[in-house]
Image (cartoon, rainbow, N blue to C red; front, side):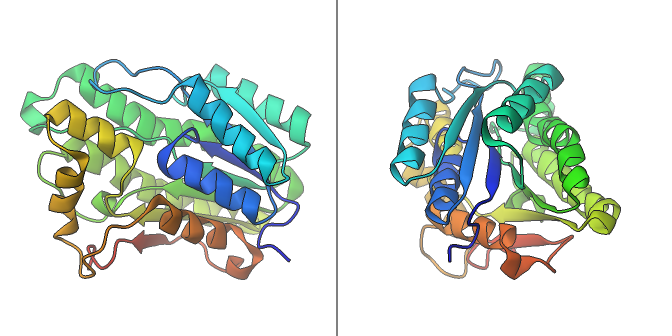
Length: 266
């Protein structure tokens, strides 16, 4: 039996990168998937976000694995977008068992040189967006008295990083929210965890590298020097950890921030 057979997973930032890898892994392990993404650029960041074609492609790949898929276009910072997406998921797929708040953005720069627009975009998507995702999905998990809420934080949420003060602040905040919600939701048999990846080849890092004028391999390679295991972590490696946390095998794992960093967070 697959790890999440018969479940419904709701994933934000699902059109590419880690979100895509998670959608396919969930489908491969027996879940239907609701895939939410913005499908337009975010002002202030200077790199290209996902698009509708990528979102539809992931949905097609999920269906090719024999599972149902719903595509949802919206901005995690907008409560009305999230409410509409949750309602559509419930209408089309009948329930929500697993929530993965994955949508994330970043930029690079000294904190005192960042624009207000840049700061607001990173905090807005990474932290406020994660809260809005939780706000509109938790009531449905509570009503069923079970569920999994998983936040994608970062290895940068476990320490500091040069020129990433805004990003680190957002990801530290996600971990604090994780631990608090784990306490509040335990009576409803809902587990809450964060997964903290190291730098991976993703749409976010590709966009950042392009904005900096360097190859993404150079950007990821610099961060990879922090790892004990000097191998590039793939989105599929993160997806495997997320699906395990979402499964019954991890039913007593809650309130944790799981590093998938090849030792970089030690």
